[in-house]
Each structure stands twice: as C-alpha cells, then as structure tokens.
Length: 129
Image (tube, rainbow, N blue to C red; front, side, top):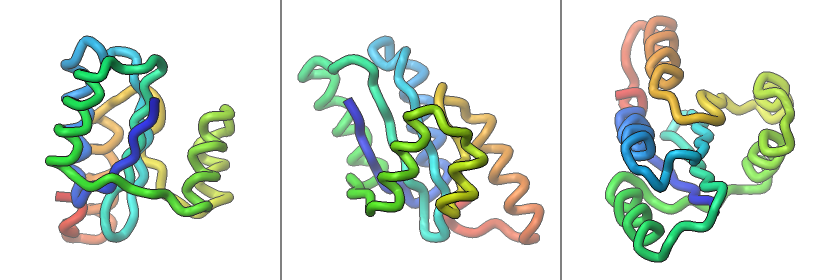
C-alpha cells in the first residue's frame, strides 16, 4: 500500500518519519524522500494492507502536513527503479533527482542533507526549514 505526498519543507518530512516510528502498524513501512527546488516528495510504502481505520488515520495525518501528489512519468520511473533494487546513486544520476532517503525511515539522512545543502549555499532556503 503506497502513499505519495508533496510536503513544503524538511520539518514536515521529519514529522512524517517520527509518526512512522511511533505507530505500531507502521513498523515495517519504508519511505523514499526526494528533495526538489519547491519542496519534498515523500512516498510511504506499507508492505501489508492497512486496516480501514489505520489507512484513514494516516491519510488524515498526511493531509494535515501536505497534499497528495501525482507523480509524473520521470518520478514513477525513479520509484520503480528504487523498488527493483537499483542503486540510489545510479538512479539519482540517471534521472537527475536528489534522493535524500530510501528505505527504513531515518531522520539523520534528512538532517545531514539540510546541513550540507545549507552549508553550500550559505543560507537556509524555505524548503529546508
């Protein structure tokens, strides 16, 4: 069961990961986080179907943070490539995307990306707040 959302900034992505870590039914969920100039694309994959209640609760939570997203063909290919086990670095090169995290939800990857990106620019863009 997959969910795809657009989030305005990094803090919302971090909140999503924290939610997944604290919910028992989300223990085996995986997440792919892609940074774009105007925001973040987050794909959450549950390996098993969720109960109606858990699905509705998760959608309500995510709808508070962002908006459901319809991926264009290039991003669909990115997700498919990652799901078939292709190297994250190779997928980033091939499709020219910034994959910040893929797999087990981990806030450290997003934090590290924020720090490196901000350090390189010398300021913090709104999407990295």
